[in-house]
Amino acid sequence: MKMTSLKVSTPKGHSGRLFSDKEDFTFRYHEDASPDVAISLSMPVRHDEFRRRELHPVFQMNLPEGYVLEQLRNRLAKTVNVDPMLLLALSGSTSPIGRVQVRSETVDALLEEQQFPGEKLEEILTWDGTEDIFAGLMDRYILRAGISGVQPKLLVPEQQETALPRVTSKTSDLIIKSGRDEFPGLAINEFLCMSMAKEAGIPVPPFYLSDNAKLFVMRRFDRDDQLNPIGFEDMAVLMGLSASQKYSKSYAAIAKAIRVYCPAEHVRASLDQLFDSVALSCIVGNGDAHLKNFGLLYSEPTQRDARLAPAYDIVNTTAYIPEDVLALDLAGNKSMFASRQGLLEFAHTCEIEQPRARIQRLLASVEAVLARYPQYREQAPHVVSAIEQAAAPFALTFE
Image (cartoon, rainbow, N blue to C red; front, side):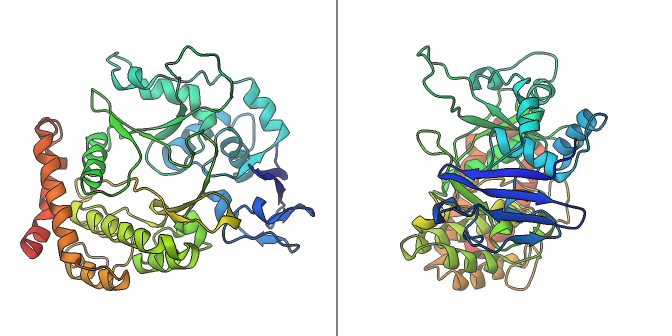
């Protein structure tokens, strides 16, 4: 089974088709496509086709990576050719990131044979069985893996508690992450860092830590209150870059993209949020705040209502890579130690008033969260110690 053509659509209707041959990937809008079925803010509806040697960034955004990709290959390699088109047809049809859906009749038939019963959030959080619940979820939902990232993670439909008859096929989804043995304490790590963001007033999706502290669970944020898809594009997509280039730019380039794609009424709040998110990443020692960990949300391309998406994927990386550096250039440097001065220059780029006060508020949030959860200092002492060591130079400089 080799995919050479896929149907692409949005909630506003049919957009066009994606074609693949030995040399290129080509996306062509349907001849009657209206402007509101555009698949990306950077790919407006036009007669000319969009041709690239690699899969277009907006489609790459849905491809699985790392552990999940490895598991998919293990499951499918004996029967099908596991290439980008097949992976896109799998992940882009069941529950894609953002508002762009990609379908293949062949893959649709394959998925119809699969059962995706859904899981109860409470049961995931309170699991105390001897077997690994993540392994079981992986087995059930691997073909629904419409989410990128190297860390083991799954997109799992949530089973609602209500007994009312279902009037829609829409479901809310849970992003479930496991650190496995190679990253001990990773779920606690992300829970603490995301709690610090929330404490500081940075917008974040709802998130949870399982009772056994092995799983970090977060609700997806690219759906509205009625669970309808809304536009989401990460910064690599908006800059026309492949996933492999996610470390290639600077935080200033993200600020520039915000000014390009966000309307005037959303620029100020988005730049404030960007500064706070970058500053918090520096303070907690997050060396993986790359282009794919920032993105814009919007209703649809013609509305001009884009804004910075909630913060996600904030973790301390120095617990695992002690000499880690920043993912992106900050004021000409990737050194975490130098980022104290770099943040003040970045504040100028983002036109931030009173950056020192904002950094002090972030430091207070780090301290408050660590004091609130003393149990995690006992369960993951290396993680808490790494966060404290990363934050210490900032406390000396800014308090």
